Image 1 (cartoon, rainbow, N blue to C red):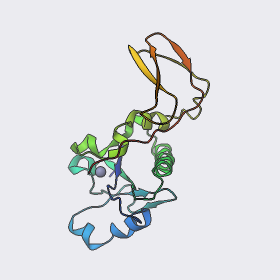
Image 2: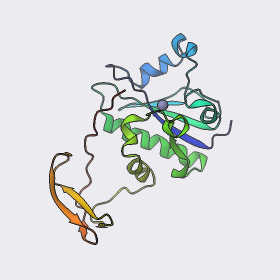
Image 3: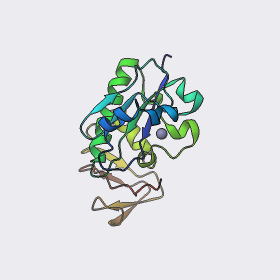
Length: 187
Ligand SMILES: [Zn+2]
């Protein structure tokens, strides 16, 4: 196949040690074969494995997705650093985008193809993920105008830490960008 998109997944496997290396073994084993599962890359907090050539059809996203899309699985193993996994995935996707002449419009989710709640952790802030792929490495000092009626401002990287509200038309400056712990996914 000639891939026309990249599909992002999460393994949903929170076992300790369910990292990229473990999945590289799993995907070649009998269980994956019986379940007719295969995909192209797995990324964890330290490395990425490639399991299929990028022009080979995988089995990860239903018929349409399988026949048109490259697949990347992000590990969610316990004691793994998901933020590092996410950063590594961005780096890998960015490389593939360059190689295949893709833009962020060619990057999609398992959810898009089959409605599955995958990639579970990333879906809740998917636009942010896409923005990072589009390349906005430095947000510091950028002015942000509020276009919503009202927005909460937080003074700590915690959804409980509501600080003040800002109103439509107000402008404020970003001093630093933080990643807030995402709510736990229920699989
Ligand atoms: Zn998936």
